[in-house]
Length: 498
Image 1 (cartoon, one colour):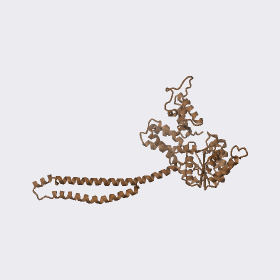
Image 2: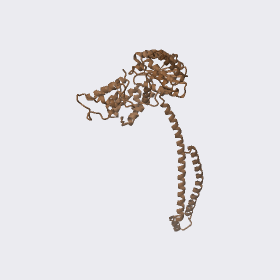
Image 3: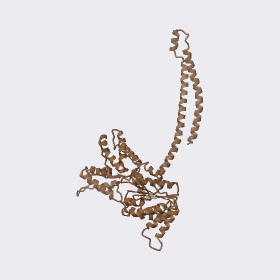
Image 4: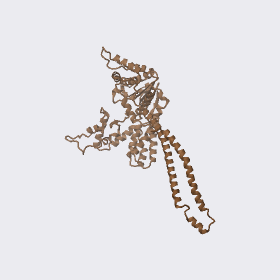
């Protein structure tokens, strides 16, 4: 295909030539018509009867009329060709601009989707063995889930601020979206590392439901494994330590030592201009929280060019270690993300007809009140929107907005009271469903949840169309008050404030 700009220039040249020719020929035709009409109207010295006859008479002969019609039709076609050519020229220019915009959007999309460590070393079987040995728990799945839960444009107040280069401790109450914000920070760090090999990134998610993720050795091992992927020199440091732990003539050590791993990471940090470390869920470490906090603060103290972001609830044991050297940021103090989130969730429910508003001004009322009352709690917003969707009309919603529960605990109490209004059979189903969601490992698919929940309790009973839920999603319609769907058609429990 010809270059769009060259084609546009050629079309523009043709238009200029056609314009000159058309003006001359068209002017000549119109002058001919005007001259004949004026001549017919100018015969005023005739008798009155002659003037009336002349006015009723067509000033052109049949042959002249046909010739004029043919000529005017030709001019009309010329105009159409000129307009089409001009439209084509403008269309080509628009397409050229669209191509440029599309490339920019693609580049931006690649940056936004950057959710993995950029491996700069050639990984063979031997190197993979070393990397896997220290990667006791891979946080990549947690990061992917965090990114999926994130609404676009949230977290910019942090990633675009100067605080992003410091040691920061971000705390928030349950449901404030700490893990989602951690995903935003990790994504920004990975984007920076992708632009230059002088920035190293390590990240981790602690989860109380998986005790092994809360061990210092798991956290340090994951960070070390991630940093070694980004520089050959860093891998050499970890490979030497692996060799020390696996001597050829002696039995291997059982596990790496946390102090040794900390020292190795400090040495690795000297290979980068900046080493960004992000750890989420520090408060979920329980009995190991003190050890984890101590090791991370020492890592920040002794490492070279280390920037660290730690996410947790505001617990005393965490504050004791972090309050002095780390800049404390309360996530609940920022309403930008809450406003974006409320707007997106409102629009989603309206478009899916879950929220049917008679007066669209009601949307603004809901928006302002929820943002004002949320106190930084994303989960609180969801609870209130779910309740408003079940209201019969706008007046009931307006009344509900004046009686919003003050916190997440009260919101869950309302949900429990709502669940208690179900039949005893449904209540039993909800309880079993929640137990399986909370404790089953690995996580069950909805079709797998369906089987144990619908198993008849009576001896000798069997499953049939009469006692089976045909729509798998309806199985958890009640349980979903306390859990959320993900893209793998599983349910994950929400964060509870206790």
